[in-house]
Image 1 (spheres, rainbow, N blue to C red):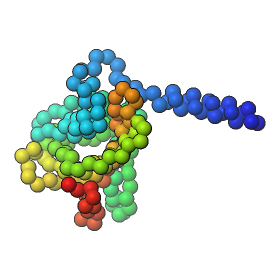
Image 2: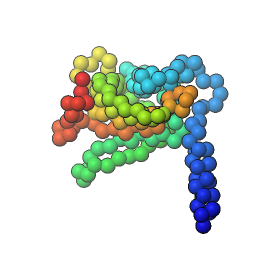
Image 3: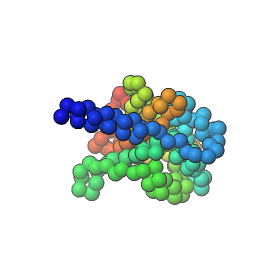
Image 4: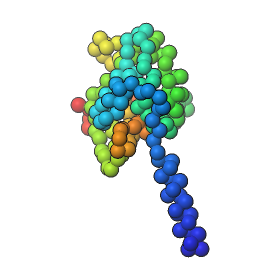
Length: 180
């Protein structure tokens, strides 16, 4: 029994290490994409920049994809019709399919206004407070909230593992410690 347990543990460790290999897109990756994942600041700035643009302006979805680990999730949360708080779990492709037309038709700028980060080893948890606008020239945001962003540094580059977010509401204002 003892050797069986050791063999099971060894199998688990081998399987786990092979599952943890990040997958970079194949082919020629533009140099500007590579530069966007060299630091936490760069990947977060790029995340906000790549989804932002004026009405009618296409987004660079290939660059967006490049930021994310192949198993990444985008997880919006909020109250449903019943009043219960829930979450949806989207892949990067799900997010693109849901957001592509809206972002171009309405115009959308998401700007980080405050950030709190904690790191240990190669993982980082970021609470990134944002404001959303329909145009860069807007002075009042139409929404605010917090993105909880999990990052992984694999020794070569940063990856977005998950973005888990909720919008501010009248009944759920952003706490002062997450504001500038």
